[in-house]
Image (cartoon, rainbow, N blue to C red; front, side, top):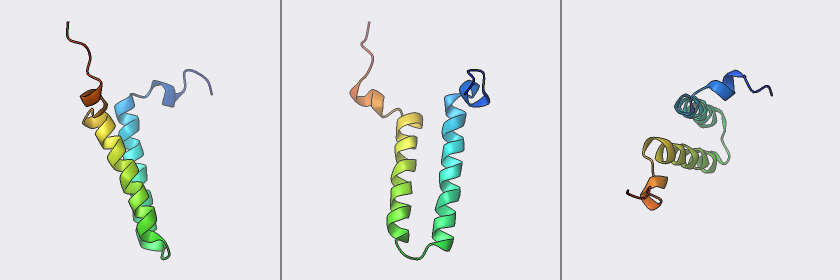
Length: 70
């Protein structure tokens, strides 16, 4: 993949939002069309979505690893 590709220059926040949109669409498709194992799949996607939100938008990793104060 070339270094000047669209994905390489796209800001991280936009890629997280696009990822959440894609996961939400997959959630909808699973809830609509899958019968067996629906709960397990939806739970897995919910955990992934929650992790993305906690890591990027809520900065959860900074709770345990804050920058040293100067």
